[in-house]
Length: 142
Image (cartoon, rainbow, N blue to C red; front, side, top):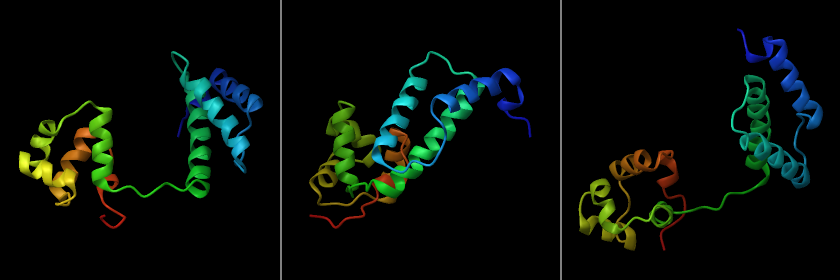
């Protein structure tokens, strides 16, 4: 398998990043902050070379691994996420009718009187380009 690092120029770019910020296990929040700063520096560039991308993907893997193990994600109900997405996307209840089926269904879902169905979750996942499981409740309803 040929990768971007088979090219001498790309390998040099990768090694330059590694010398600046070595790829090693993230063991604390301070190093996490430095890793995120390095990621931000890379993604703010107008374009990345293949060597830059290989380094960036490896570093983001390390960050993701640390965050998964050390930073708990709060449990959020699917309807709460939906409300947040509506606000973030400047949507009104009527904008959800094509996704949930009717005005009354939208109202009942948003008020907590009716759970999201699998069909709703599938359409919301597609609409917001998010994994379906983020809309599945993992906490009890109020």
